[in-house]
Image 1 (cartoon, rainbow, N blue to C red):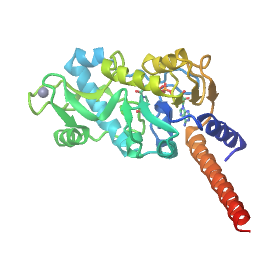
Image 2: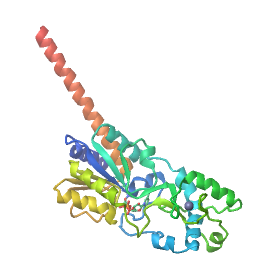
Image 3: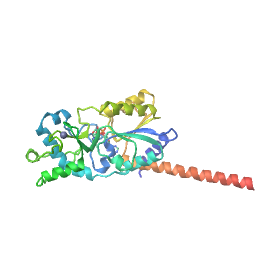
Image 4: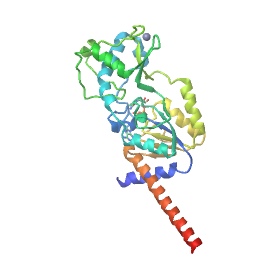
Length: 301
Ligand SMILES: NC(=O)c1ccc[n+]([C@@H]2O[C@H](COP(=O)([O-])OP(=O)(O)OC[C@H]3O[C@@H](n4cnc5c(N)ncnc54)[C@H](O)[C@@H]3O)[C@@H](O)[C@H]2O)c1
Ligand SMILES: [Zn+2]
């Protein structure tokens, strides 16, 4: 552990302690150590242009392009597992230092790391819905169907994009047979995620605002906060006078309003914070033991 990490961990442990469970908002920075890239690096600039919901709905060709790319990209996305930052979040939740976790990620890695009370603000790539008849399918099952329909579609790519997508040549896209709904045969199958240009369901936003109202503070992990759908919770928290602590590498859109910004790697800072807390528990237990030994000795002696 570098001295920087140790200092940041000590600071974070201090900030979070003794107040009751903080609300957490996470972003793509949580999963970069799992091999899933973020949209905006430390410079705050967007690296890739994701497909908008308008484009996705505009034509069968757009959906074919989406599913061809997603079919290839999802293999690696699906193979990614939780990293030490996800595991530390679970540990902090078990210690009741943090409570609910609002995530902007669609990778399901918080849940796989054992974190409970996760609100998937932008949905999940693991589920697919038919926009025509509402039929839901697990992505894994759909993946099997796509493989059966495309036995010779052997495009490999080292590139993986944040939304589980990759870029493919038009010639590859054109020969991909996109999936159709088993119930109504429509090709309007969409992953249950909030696309760019789409809005988060009103009741989900309301649920999150209620959590902000109940929390002693908001902890933001790995988000550039460039997207309003996450930024609005920071704004709500600061409007209520709550402390907002940000652990994210690089610049964010809320740097001027947050209480603290710890700039570093989550997969280092969060496990180190759990360690600091466990050590201080150990010291407290030791002190309590010493104290009771003294009391016992003085009362018996
Ligand atoms: N894993 C995913 O599910 C995933 C990945 C990319 C994008 N998205 C979607 O794209 C949108 C992007 O917004 P966002 O704010 O979540 O992400 P973002 O890409 O805009 O910002 C990520 C931030 O995390 C920082 N970061 C990256 N790795 C880090 C690390 N190891 N430690 C600390 N900080 C690190 C980056 O510097 C950046 O500031 C979200 O709405 C989300 O739905 C999801
Ligand atoms: Zn259907």
